[in-house]
Image 1 (cartoon, rainbow, N blue to C red):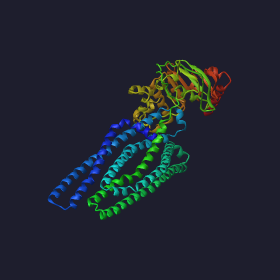
Image 2 (cartoon, rainbow, N blue to C red):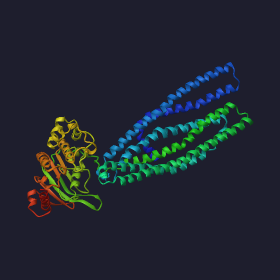
Image 3 (tube, helix red, strand yellow):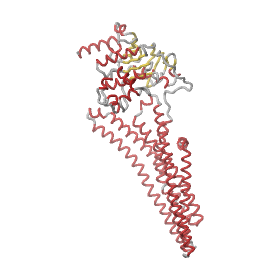
Image 4 (cartoon, rainbow, N blue to C red):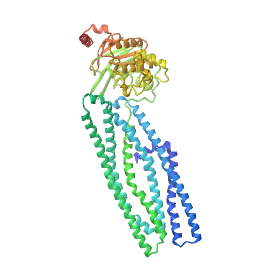
Length: 581
C-alpha cells in the first residue's frame, strides 16, 4: 500500500483525466448491466405469448437495445482512451523525472552504475506505470463494481441460485493470493535481468571496434546469450505460474456455471422459476465471472507493474553526493583566482587520492599539473568543477567556497576539455555551438580557427554540417580533440581546464594549439594537465604530484634545474624524442 500511495502521488497532475475516464467507466458498467435486463424483459414477453401489443413492446425494447449498444461503443472508447492518455503522459513525466534525477547525480553515483541499467530504469521500468493506470486500476475498479452490480441483481432475481453462484469465489481468491506471493519476486528478477541484458548490449555496441580488433565476437556472443537466457528463464518462470493460475480460474468459473445451470434447472422444475429469469441469470453469469476470470491477468500485470515501479522509486529515493545548500548563492562573475586549502580526497575509504594539497592560481595564470598516471591530476580538475566535494579542506574561487555557491553558477564559468573527448551525434557546428546557446555562425568559425580545426572542417565535403557520428566516430582522435577545444574556447569562460587537451594531435598541430592556448592564458585562468612537458613550458606554475601530494612546484626553468621527478620526466621525454628522430 505504501508503494501504491507513492505511485499515486505521481499521478495527481492527471486526476482530471483519470476522473473523466472513471466516469466513462461507471457509465459503461451501467450500460453493461442494463442490457441483460432488456433481454430478460423481451424473453418474458415472448414466453408469455406474442400479441400485437407485445410485438410493439419488443420493437421498443429493440430500439432501446440499439441505442444502448451505440452508447456503449462511445463510452468504451472514452473508458479506454482517456486512461491511456493520462497514463502515457504520466510515463513521460516520470521518465523525465528519472532522467533529470540521474542527470543531477554527482560523478560518484556513476562509479558502480551501468549505462544499460539506467536506460532500462528510465525506459522499461517507467513503462509499467502505463500498465498500472491504463489497465490495472481501471479494470480492477470496473471488475469490482461490475461484480457488485451483478451480485445485487442476481440476488434480486433468486437469492438461493445467487448463493450457489458464489461457491467458487473463495477458492479463486485464495489461489490469486498464492499467485501474488510467488509471481512478484519472479517479475523483479525479470526487470533486473532485462536491465543487465541492456547493459551488456550497450557495452558491446560501444566497444564493437575493440571486440573485432581482439577477435572476441564469439566470447561476447556467449556473454550476451547468458544474459538473454537469464531474462528468458525468469520470464518463463513467471509465465509458468500464471499459466497454472489461468486454467485453474477458468475451471472454477466453469464449475460455477455448471452449478447454476443444474440448480437453475432444478428450481425451474420444482419451484417454477420463470424462463426469463433463467435466461437473465445465464446472461449475467458471463458478467459475473468475467471479472473473476480476468483476475489472473490483473494479478500478473500488477506484479510486473509494481516490480518496475519499485526499481523506479528506488532510484528516485537516492540522493546526490553533491548538492546545493539551501542558502547557496550565485557565484558572481569570476576573476579566476583559485585556491586549494589543505584539500584531501578519496573515492574509496582508506585509499587516499589527494592528501593536504594546497596552492593558489592567480587571475590569468596558467597552472600545469604534472606527474605519473593515477596521482590525482584529473581529480583536482574535477574538484574545481565540483563534480565531487573534498573530504577535508576547501576550494575557493575568488574567495567563495565552492560548497557555498550553486553548481550551475560555478560550472557556467568553467570551460573543460576532457581527456576522454565526447562528441554528441550531430554536426560539427552543433557540437561546437553546444557550449553557448544562440551563438552566431561567425563565432563558431572563429572558435574553430583558434582550435586549429577550421581548415580540416572546410576540407570535408559538408564542412561544418558534417555529421560526426556517435561519440564522434567519423573524426580522427586529433580532430575530436580540437572540436572539443573549439567548444571550450567558444564558451569564453574565465576558467579553462585542459585535461590532456593535445594528447591526440601531431606535434605541428600541438604547437599551433599551444600558441592559441598561450594567447588565452593571459585573459583567463588555465589549469592544464599534460604528459608532454613541452606543452607546459610557459606555465606560470607547475605542480608535480606524487602519491596524491605536491612533491615539487615552480616554473619550468626552476624545476629543470633541481633534481627530482620533473627533471627525470624531462630527461625521459628528451630521450624518447631523440629515438623518434
